[in-house]
Length: 517
Image 1 (cartoon, rainbow, N blue to C red):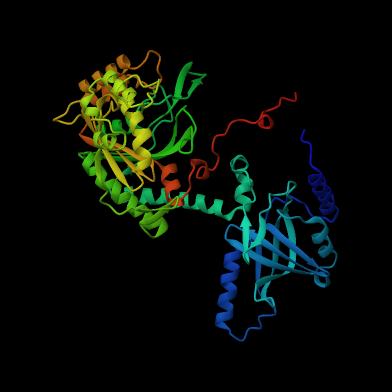
Image 2: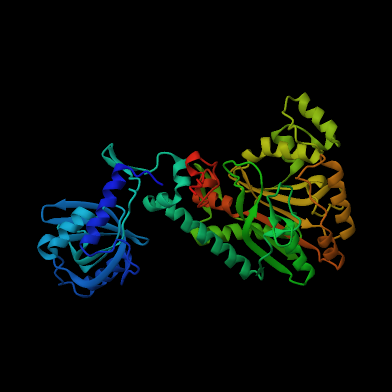
């Protein structure tokens, strides 16, 4: 049973005041004729149509609903602000018109309560458009007070500080964060516009949106540790997907030539400013295309999304100007590592040789890096990634960390793969996809041989996927992008937790479920 604070106990007593006055604090229905924005727009249209309208008298009939955000009682009158998703509107209450209900408003309503108010609009002496309240009722009583933004005057300017000083508190109580921080609400409106813009772009280029299984008998499509669950009826362990890839490419076998999916992936890995265990991914697969064509489409897609949601391709991320104009530089992985980590990986063709070269230069060698490709991945992450602020394609990766990618004709140990980097982080990953079923089977077997015994990062051999490939898969280009990271970039947020509504956090003792039976 919850232990209520003193403030919450006061608000609980106000429930009794409301009910004693015949008002149900949580009615089943609400009435609203206009949002706050619609109310103000309609009033402005009235005044434009009739310039002689007396602005000091109420005009029109509006019923609005929203959350009570401020109250100022001035003797036998009161001003308040109501906020809905469209904005804010000032309310004006008069004791001589509302009688006992005015006192009820003053005594029983609190900041954070949802209420409904009806009246006409007028302008105060200060020029603020205001609803002259003729009737009102409560829609939901807030028992817990919302965090309140702090205001101060600095250098003659009013400065509003966030209602939550501790970011973790904002993530744990996102509902309260959204209720008090308009900026947080705008981030998630922006996120929704980004996803809509991605869909419009791909739909406009002939791609078909599809849905593939989240629960899979085999995980695949990436090197990652899966989450495991159990199907009781089938007596079968299943995995939450780590990628859509293998199912989407099955659809190419079925003559669906351009397919994409936007949805959740799940990887049982570490959490950081750019990683969350569940995240939103866009993947598409394009028959008869290669990674060069996918690179060009990627540039165009991100430029169009920026145009759509921001109205510009020139953005700022963490204080650095970034241009999303197409024409990104292409740099080979070997060139990038030579420039930023000063190691010529081509001169070290084995894992042992590369490990010794790294040690000779005093570079840390990850203990989990069991293959040459994993060592190269570590060099990329530690020395190259953070340097790539402007949009850049890093191309041509080692074969052993790209088991689903087609090898380059002239260098069989290198595959046709690119990763796109912006703002010092990886944004997307793409291949010219392998469509030779015999080569694919051999790649799976090699991964099991090269990875440490029991490693869950190894790609399991998916016999059904190989069966699909044996029916014939057209040559194709594949692409994957983290939608959360794209939102970080366009919203100028430094951590993924700012752009996920309910990010995963370590459980606090107070969050643990208590069995009171």
